[in-house]
Figure 1 (cartoon, rainbow, N blue to C red):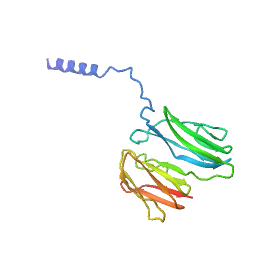
Figure 2: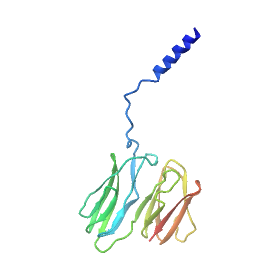
Figure 3: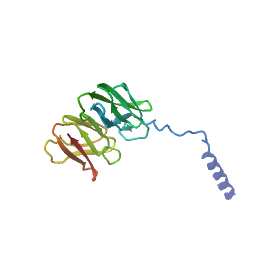
Figure 4: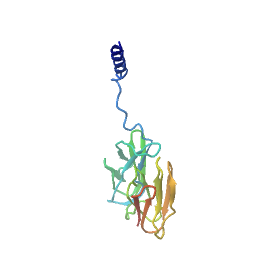
Length: 202
């Protein structure tokens, strides 16, 4: 009798575990809340190029998956390849966008006939325990926005003349720092040893 009871229980459990052959794979862009570009504004000279990268983020700032589709609002001013490479064509202003599903990140590109300049705005994200990109290059007076996700990090700059104020331990916020002095400004997250980055101001 006991053996029959055990056998019946096994059959019932197996039946409960079946069911769902009709489920579908999740949409890889479902968790995307924003799209962050490595540069949000830049000035280029005619013929110059600039590589843009797009990072899909969840609502808590965590990096997620999703391929970006690139476009330029005025291709006559600057074109953008399917890989995010911007090429300046003629003087003017255009907006380059990266779309991941219904979410869009954008960068304003100003093309000057007299020569180029460096980006004046850039972003640093924190996928896992890394700063991305490791090296951010901007022009004098440019601003770097540090996008903190759901994990605690800080940004402590080395003792270099002209460095901006440190950013203490925080999460789920964006914090901007403006760099008014040329030089190389290394920084670390002391919460996670080995997590480092650099801002180069030219």
